[in-house]
Amino acid sequence: IAGITQAPTSQILAAGRRMTLRCTQDMRHNAMYWYRQDLGLGLRLIHYSNTAGTTGKGEVPDGYSVSRANTDDFPLTLASAVPSQTSVYFCASSVDRGYNEQFFGPGTRLTVL
Amino acid sequence: AQSVTQLGSHVSVSEGALVLLRCNYSSSVPPYLFWYVQYPNQGLQLLLKYTSAATLVKGINGFEAEFKKSETSFHLTKPSAHMSDAAEYFCAVSSPTGNQFYFGTGTSLTVIP
Image (cartoon, rainbow over all chains, first blue to last red; front, side, top):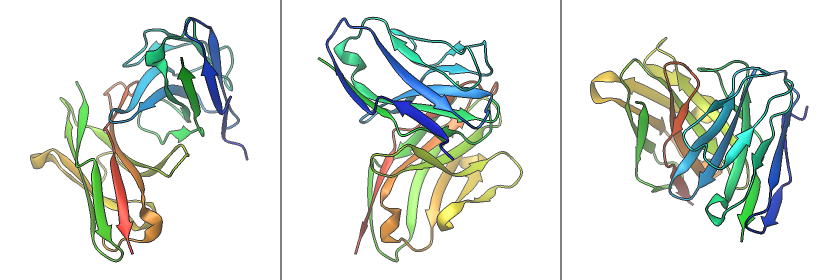
């Protein structure tokens, strides 16, 4: 049982470059989420998707975009990376939106120079 | 707007001692509250959640939390700490729509042998 996989595990990126973080779940969950984790700030929601074909903005969406073409995949794209986007990124999913347990992936450590 | 505040970014306890991690919430409506644990270099795992069914919520690994509306608190406790409890703990609250999740800044628990 894989659960949620994220790729890459880590990445060093030059500022201004485009980057897509991949997230795939095999649990057929409807809802998916992207968070960034920064020291002293906890986790902050970037974007979410309640079901395939729909997405919404979280607390810190600027500079990021997402798509949800199918149930399993929820990629996060940085169109033009900036150093302030250096962070650890976590993808999560839940059966449905709201009050259900979220299952988290192992994270992607991104450094923007 | 919903938010949570975790008091104490670092807590140290002796093995076998009581664990108390504090979380206060701010919510305009009855909240859904969560505690998650993060072990080093891993994603988050759900410890327990409050969904208004009972004020005392029991979770995994011997943890429990009590919802106190009068104090707007949802503190996490464990009667006897184990070395394996050393981790980062996050309190979280969901928005009434269930689309947004707000995490606290986290409390790092150290267990001293």
